[in-house]
Length: 137
Image 1 (cartoon, rainbow, N blue to C red):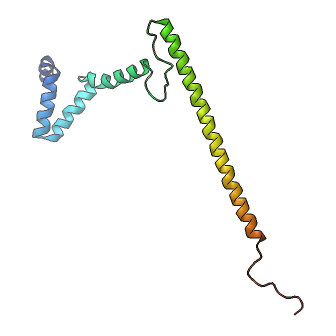
Image 2 (cartoon, one colour):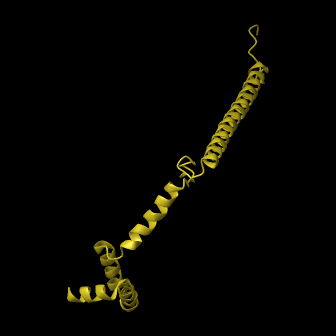
Image 3 (spheres, one colour):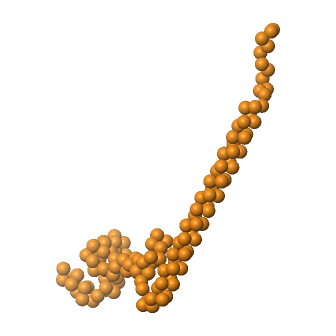
């Protein structure tokens, strides 16, 4: 473990250089060092990098699933009120547009169903091509 302590004293660049060198010389050793670095937490910034971006996204309201409700205050109340009103108006327009699309889908489905029923009626009303048996003869 003295070797690990010496490499720790040199810092993360030493660990990275050792890992790259071991990948070049013998790839299973490089893989083992990589797994050790991840397991031991010596490269903790790798784990925190993704979390930092995710927390920034939540903080600033980014992401399609979040909407813009979580945007922080800018400190200017007039602007914050304007932004909140504009976002509410956009959400209302989106809701109206989705309802419009639903009505269009329903109308299209109704038209297709009516066309199907009309075709079905004309098929059943059409006389059959097979001759009917003559009861007289």
